[in-house]
Length: 514
Image 1: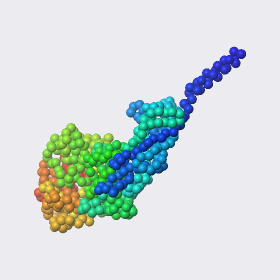
Image 2: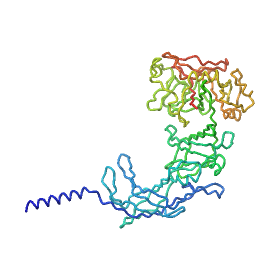
Image 3: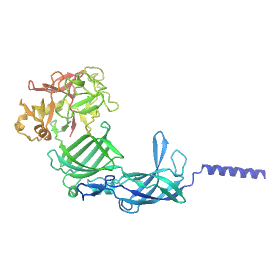
Image 4: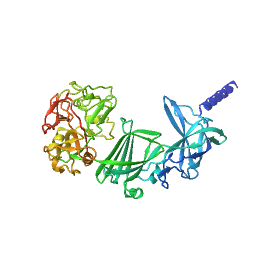
């Protein structure tokens, strides 16, 4: 009898342990939420052009699905969203009733015990949209890129019904109407458009939107007009790069220090620069030039000069480089250093240490300039021209000529297929002769630049305004020298087969393969 009693007691204890270790019973309840998408300028998907200015209003579509999440704090700053159900819009219009079933008990939490919902808990509702490719039309955006979020609070759970606060959805993207034009103001109709946004200027590209466009897009929107959705949870501050391909030609638009807010609608006129290629060898390989000489500041990092004719020369940081001020320098020793993290620090002039060269066979510590993070361009693939690149550009391929732009002497290079938009002697003025043309701001130079002309200012340290020295990427086979491009408006001379000590300070102009 005692033995039977002991067995029964053991079974009871085992059952009790089993009950304690068994997960809580799952429970599902009905949730009904009154939801709005707000008024104009809060979500941007239904275009109303009846007024003086287009306004994008947000409306629900019957059957639209919203996912319900419980946000769980896992500690250490980690928030884990747990999906607990799906709600569906019951009607069309700016407001609707969302209805469906959510799990309220026995919710599985990874790495923790299951939990039940309770009054006071906050739930996140996400309208997550589709994933169809963008084609530049507003209809596609409305059908597939309607992304928004709302937060609701549970007020009670009674029987099988959950009661919460109303949901006011906030958009998680901005909608843009881009009018694409060339520099002359003519509409362009690309077959493809890529939009890159870069946060805080020095970070890698944070989003990349590819848009495939055909004739039907422009039939619906008008010449040169595309609509695009860019994802921003709340707001965006940084730079934007728009690249477009038109019949094999490439165009770009780049702007820094822009700010956008989620849920807003923007109309932007975009004047895109055509990219003009330069042939660099007998095989027909081509490059594009950077928009200005490379510059560096201790506090601000790397950038291209804001204009092609800009140079610093003997002043400011070129005289006394510093890692802790806002002054830019634009004359550097050969090669960039400190790139283990992908950033790059400025070589300090006249410092012939192992950082800058070791031997003809060991160039460890020397890095390609194009690997630095350049704050005012969204492009990648920049590199320093080789000695053979410079040689072909001046000796075999593009036309060139000495010139003064905005008061700064230098050298103009002309791209393949250049057509002179001015009356400065036509292309014959750029046959490599000693003709000195003058271009002023306010029309002359802007027209030349739009036609693809590249300007290399005379930015020599000792003779600024007369001499220019630009690094090549080519070592001359010794442990201390590399080749460079030299020209002088004083002597009307040019040289691309000489070399300099790598510790000397020269200008850097980058190219990228076309």
